[in-house]
Amino acid sequence: MTQAEVGAYLHISQRSYAHYEAGTRDIPLEILIELANLYQVNLDYLVGRTNVKDRLPYL
Image (cartoon, rainbow, N blue to C red; front, side, top):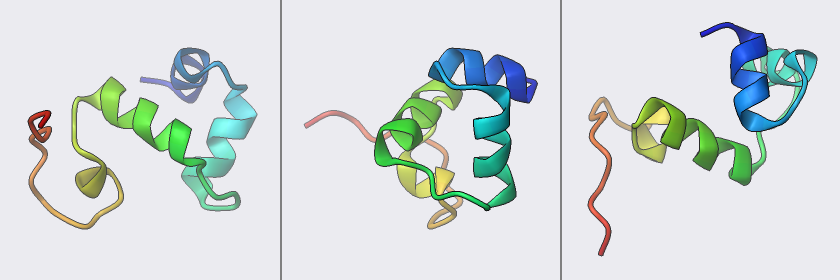
């Protein structure tokens, strides 16, 4: 996906998303959750804490 496509999904501008990718701005938790949903991975995988992509089951 392009930055513009991801930004549209997140309801933010491409430029804002580019800052998150570049690490020049911290990503708000709400955006991290939406990215995990978009890519169907768990948050730990998204932030580099694990290599396991599987989403965790709801309790």
